[in-house]
Every structure is written in C-alpha cells, then in structure tokens.
Length: 128
Image (cartoon, rainbow, N blue to C red; front, side, top):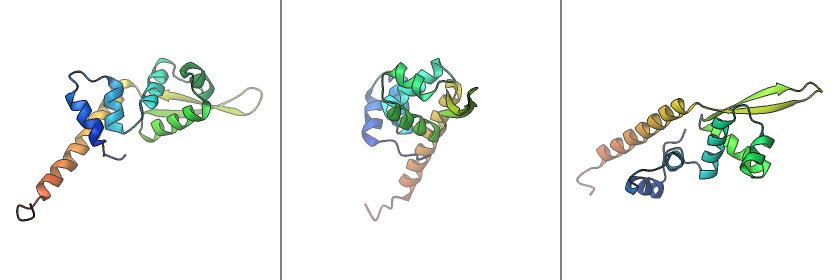
C-alpha cells in the first residue's frame, strides 16, 4: 500500500478539530469519499453484491465496482464468490471490520510518519 497521503488532504485534516471517519480514511488511504461511503455501506450490509450496493448508494454499477476494487487493494473489503442455484455465480463483498480498519489506519499513518522522519534525517545542513 502506498504511504503517501495528499499534502492538501493532510493539511485539511490537521486543521479540523474533529475530523470525521470519511475524512481520515480518504486522507490516510488516499481514497475518494465515495469509496469510503461504499465501505460504510458494506459495514451495514455484509455480503452485498455490486447490484445491491449500486442500488443502495444510488450509483452506477461500474463506479461501485471500481470503488470495491480500490477498497480490496487497500485491505478494506474482501470478495467471496457464491454459486447460484440456477448456475453461474455472483460476487459478494464484505467490509473489513472497523476495528481492523482502525489498525490499518494506524499502521499506514505510522509508516508515512516514519518515512517523513527518515527524510528529515537525510537533510544535510550544507545543502540547505
């Protein structure tokens, strides 16, 4: 996972006295707010299909699919294949529990902070 929060998003997060979960997740994980909304919808309805989420979120299925791909890449959702009685299959998605997502937020932010500390240590007084 990339550890590169947007400087503008990070700045906004720091000046907000009580940032909301969607703001923190968007900044730390580098995701869009609609992707966080998809994550939150999955928390409320584990095992949802793309079609169910698209209906719930009032978004196009292709956009929901892209959001789910991003969430899976970030470790915030998983996909399970369910075989249908009449043949074929459907994918069902479940959000990573919020307790685990909080740990991922901490780990990602810690990695980013360590990278910034390393960069600070690389500054040479002669080059400044």
